[in-house]
Amino acid sequence: SKGGVVGLTRSLAKEMAFYSTTMNTKRKKLFEQLQGEEKKEEEEDKDKEEDQWRQRQHHDLTVSNNTVRVNAILPGFIDTSMSKKVPGRIRERIKNQIPLKEFGTVDDVANMTLFLASSRSRYVTGSTLECSGMISI
Image 1 (tube, rainbow, N blue to C red):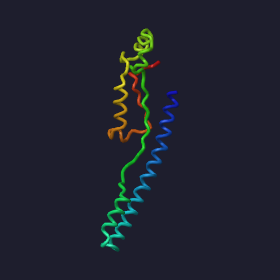
Image 2 (image 1 turned 90 degrees about the vertical axis):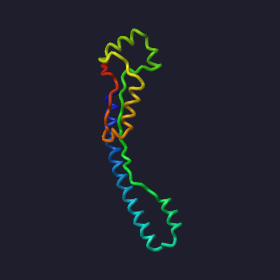
Image 3 (image 1 turned 45 degrees about the vertical axis):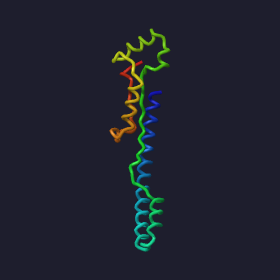
Image 4 (image 1 turned 90 degrees about the horizontal axis):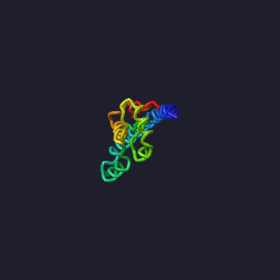
């Protein structure tokens, strides 16, 4: 199942990178076209400032980078209320298989999610990040 997640993440990242590039290019062209139309209108009708203001409010677009990035987090054994229901001897056996000798926390996964959602990961796409303490079951 890990291989499926990796493959899906990479495939979606490629598709969304193409889609994002195409949409950003179209948005930029539309923005430039609307700016040109507004300049023509200003030259023709300087007396209709209020009308132009309303039109600008209606057509006000900003060119921004709306790149869609696709990444996945692969959590290991995370200490949650559900995992606490696993019998103690099995939990100990799993903990001994983890090189860090402790279970991950919900905060560990949340921090990785925050990183991926932040601008610090702007060039990260198609990646699968493990939050597993290097467990190998």
